[in-house]
Length: 220
Image (cartoon, rainbow, N blue to C red):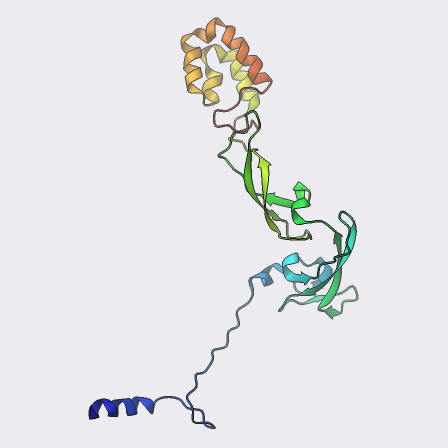
């Protein structure tokens, strides 16, 4: 009991105390972490040309949809920019069209693509995509939003190649083999192109784009 008590007293003398109050304290380590958005923001450029991630703007409740509007903005911490007179400022205004991000033109954002849906189907299939607005585009609301899009992807099959194979080697099922439809290809091969009738029909169907790749993708 005496030994443990003496150990506790010895340890307590190692505690750092404040000179004024004689109370224990811990030294706080200073952190100089740089925010992730700083890398996207050019230094000493025009404030109005900064990407949206570099500023915070107040909502203009009086703006009319589809019409130009002015918004009051302020640069985020650790961002430096100038006005038209090359004076460093923090508060500025930007002009933009009053519309939400999901109402932008398709060229103003990029969306994820899906290879699990059929592009050649009736009715045409859609898929859930996640879209992100380009850095130089200003809009209202969330810059990352979901959207239903038509299946629009390609597996690298060329329509001209499929049509050429159908005309020249369609009797042996080369066109169907090329499109990945090996069952139909075997059927044409062992029936000599359905005695020519199947070959002529496939030329027409591939020519109008009705018959496509087996994976459901579009021609290139």
